[in-house]
Length: 68
Image (cartoon, rainbow, N blue to C red; front, top):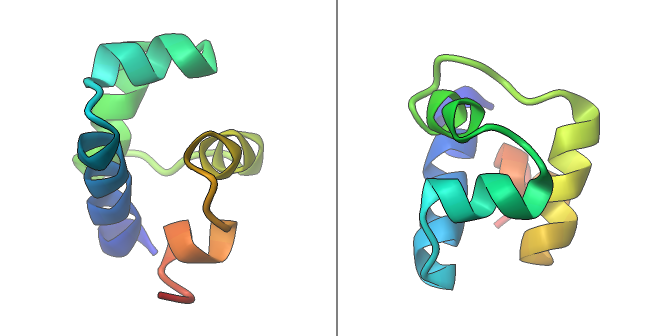
């Protein structure tokens, strides 16, 4: 999951035209955690995966690389 998740998160964020800080603020998270996720240094908790999926209007399966 890690590599695909990192890539997809960054791609979705860039497609939306926002930076890590703006995404972090929208989800009430720290900018640092977004950076850690995008660099593959941490994996999000299920609750944060749900937030990301809702924010970007994609499925958790998409974020995890289970589906295209």
